[in-house]
Each structure stands twice: as structure tokens, then as C-alpha cells.
Length: 268
Image: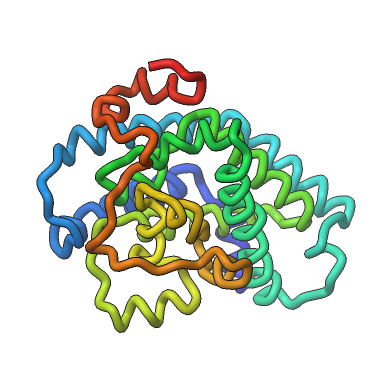
């Protein structure tokens, strides 16, 4: 456990980049080998748009990263936050910390974006994708990247999460998000076992169905427990899914980066 803590306390930026690019590459290759949907679409053009938004997400997080680091350092130095107030062994700190960071920084943020109209307008860009695959994981408007960053920073301070836990959470979040958006077939038996703990592609795809009530379900990113606990869990035969959001089904609206950037502001 100490070696894991030591690694993530000072994980090089190059390693964090490798996690993102490596995960994307692995799931991209798996999508070619065991795809769920085989319908033809302009995969490289689609990826280009989503990778543009991946870069803007990286840029936002890079520019604001010092706030996250300072927040964690302040909480630990002042023994502030839930994890600082309870005396847990390191392994339990890792498990509880990952669970609660996932809840506050991902599930709660995601749920709120669907409930607050202003935030939804930014999150909408993620839902306009009509060909969900692993590149969709980081298809976030720069405004949403700021919103998500604010939730994550607040979660880090409230929990008093040490920086090793923050980087461990972010690394797990990247991989699991790429996994649960991937256009891959997971055998039903394996999916059921994984879904007992983690968000799987079959589970998360339901969230990308174009109509309510499914759009407002399955908010989880890493752990499936939060959707089950708060009654937002749902199932739907993935073969019946239609991706997108019913208010923006015009294909031209989400094939132009300029138009997509303008959606939250009512511009096309």
C-alpha cells in the first residue's frame, strides 16, 4: 500500500498522460474487435471532434490544477475533512476515499447537471453524441470541465483527501469512464459480476438513450452503488438504444465544433 501511495503522491504528468492515451487506445482497439454496434459511422471524424474536447478538458484541468493541489494540502495540513477526522488504516482510507470522491465529484456533480438548467446546457454537449464510444468519455464543453473541476475540488476539501488519493481517484476515473462509454460487447455473465460494484458499458449506455426517463438514470462513473442507493438505477436492452438527446437530434449540430461550443449560449 505504501508503494501505491508513494507512486501517486508524485505521479509524473507523463504517466497521467499515458493512462489517458493508453486507455483510449486499448478500448479503441477492443471496439474494433468486439463491438456492440457495428453500424458504420465516420469513426475518425467522430473521434477528432471528441478528442478536441478531450484536449480542452485537459487544458482546463491543467490551468486550474494548482487549486486542487492547494485545497488538498490545506485540508491535510489543517486536519480538515472527513478522512482527517476518522482514524482509518491506509487501505480503508483508499477504499472509502475513492467511494466518496466518486459520489461527490462524479455522481453528485452529474446528477446536479441534469437538474439545474444552466448546468444542463453545458452538459448537453456530452449527450448530443449519436455514436457513443470510448472517445465520448471526455466529450465535455470547456464550461462543463470547469463545473466538474469545482465539484471535484469541493469534494477533496470536504473529505480532506490527501493528494495521493486525489491522483489515484482521477486515474481510476479516466479509465472507468473510457471503459463504460466504450462500444464493446461484455459477456452478460461478466457484466453482471462487474456491475455489482462498477459501472459497466451496458449500464452506462442506458444513460445515453435519447429520451427520458432513461437520460436521467445511471449517473455513476466508477461505482454502481450510488445509482442503486439513490434510486437512479435503470436497465434497458442495449440493442434498443438510440443515442443522443431528443432536443438536439440534428446531426449537423454535433458535427461542428463551433456549433457545439455555442449550444450553451443558444447559438448555432
